[in-house]
Image (cartoon, rainbow, N blue to C red; front, side, top):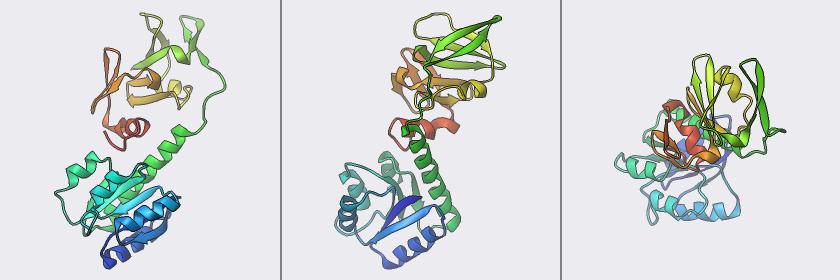
Amino acid sequence: MLKCIAVDDEPLALELLEDNISKVPYLQLVAKCSNPMEAMKLLQQQPVDLIFLDIQMPGLTGLQFIQSLSIKPMIILITAYEKFALEGFNLDVVDYLIKPVSLERFVKACNKADELFQLKNRHTANAETVSDYFFVNVEYSLVKINFSDITFIEGLKDYVKIHLANSNKPVITRISMKSLEDQLPITRFLRIHKSYIVSLKQITSVRKSSVYIGDMELPISDNYRDTLAVITGKTSL
């Protein structure tokens, strides 16, 4: 259940938001606020997971409110103005909705927030595997691979290459990427592409479409960009 608040200076807009929120089963509306100062006071009293936020309000604008937060919940901006979209996304909002918002578009934005919420909880949970290694078949032998030695894994049809920090020669084994991914601790490894899984601790930098492990550049596919954004502390890349 996502605890949320709605912030808008227009009473009718707040009523509409409340009605839409009531139709989404995993949302719990904690409070409605007519201005950012009310919302700020409420956040000091109890944490929330998601804020539905208008932009143009008297006094403190929605964007200024976001910038004032030291701990930021997920935020979905709902506004009558398209011109603030770029600035909103630069502040890592989950979505940017233009009034009037259809229920279908509203639910789509909520689903995105819920997916990010579930993903973040999954990766922050204490879900480490019991062991620090696993075995793979290599030329009729079982080879031990330490999780800490892996830099990244590359898929090649029915085979994978396991690249290791302590070896210039990757370990090649016949296994699917999905089967191998299931053996890896989710708090230490992340799939970024249908052909690549990376060790989170080995990542040296991230760009919009690439992950770098030292001098090695690996592509990020659109399907996994949101996942990587959450792990790196952003809601979007």
